[in-house]
Structure formats: C-alpha cells, structure tokens
Image 1 (tube, one colour):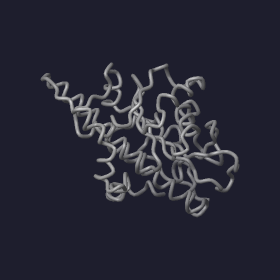
Image 2 (cartoon, one colour):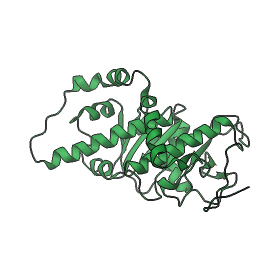
Image 3 (cartoon, one colour):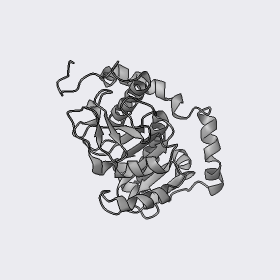
Image 4 (cartoon, helix red, strand yellow):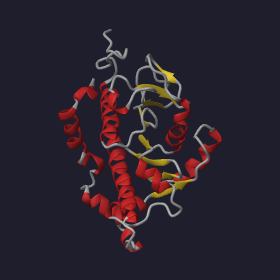
Length: 264
C-alpha cells in the first residue's frame, strides 16, 4: 500500500463510507482550528466517536478518532487520524503514537455524555487569558450570551493525567455544552463535529472580545440576565435549527481553496 512522506497509508476504500466521512470532517476540523489560530503546536485534541459496528471494533466498547501525536494540526489528514479505545490505546496500524494522557479529559466526557459525538479542546491565548480571570466569561457581547446560556467551569488540578479527576470534570460540565478549564483553556461538547467547531468559534470570539474590551480601560456594559436566558432559543433561530451545519459547507470550501489535502 502506498504511503506518503510521513509513512501514512491512504485509508479511503479501506474503511466504511461512514467512518471515512467522519475522518474527513474531523481532519477538516483540525485544519480549521489551525487556520483560525487556536492550535498549540502538537498539543490538545479533538476527538470524535466512531459509529458502532465498524470493522475491528469490539461491539461492547466505544472507539474514537484522534490526532496522531507529533503532527501539527495543519498537517492532519483523514487517513492520519488514529483510532483509539476508551483508554486511549491505539487500535490498528499507524506510524504515530497517541498521547493517552491527553485523552483523560476526552474519555471522561465521552463516557458520561452519550450525546458527546465530538469533544473539542484548545489552549487558545484569549481563552486561557479569560480562564485565568476570577469572574470568568462576562456578558459583554452578543457572542458571549450563547456561551453563558450553557457554560460550566472546572478548577485547575495540574496537567490532566489522573483518572481521579474525571468525576469532577463530568460533574462540572453536567448537561452543558461549554466548559471553561480554569488556567487551562476552552472545551466544547457537541452532537457533531460542525456543531463543536461553531461552538468553539463563538467561545473563542467571546473571550477575544472580552480581553479587548477590558484593555480599553473604560467602564464595561454588561448584558442583562434576561437576555442571556433567551439566548439558547435565539441561537436556534439564528442558525435555523441547523447549528454548525449552516456554516460547515462554507468552511469546507475555504479549506478547499487553500489546501484540499485534508481529504487524503
């Protein structure tokens, strides 16, 4: 089987059509995170749950796709994504390792939330800056109200290496879609890759706006709680109940114009 310069063999036609589409969408998400400047070299992860019944999958155990450890996000392709089990162990052939420690957060949330088809975690500079503020995200922008309607906080416990942190992560997220990891970064949980990406776009945008507003030095105007309370319904109205899929085709066209190799 022909391999590329990184030793990655093409998988199109070697996996189910359903798995291949998930791989393409997840590779696109990694590329978009790099494109928007949220990546942290080879660190952090975006994980996606594989459909059940895939070849080589234990029917009693979920499996996931995640980035090969050592590749920059703008290098990731559909074929390079690594299949792992719930413990972060690599399944199948890949010349790259995975970072099991980095999957601690993801495995906890995937296991607790069956609607968590995708978990997206970044160390974006604006997100980390706001996560270090005692009051966290403030209701300062239209973007922020969509986050505040479904936002949890998790206190920093050091690098996420210990399984005993998992119950606290799960409890702090609860049924919410956004989690601010104090002194650490941002995380979104969604039913699809497009939804997870759109949520992170709003999350990071709200943080960037907050840092800029605070740097101006003037008195800040907070959006009233009553408006925040209506935000979830307004988000559905704005996206015509399509969520991330409203913007996803246009985002893919952006990638196609720049570099379509994510599909390989």
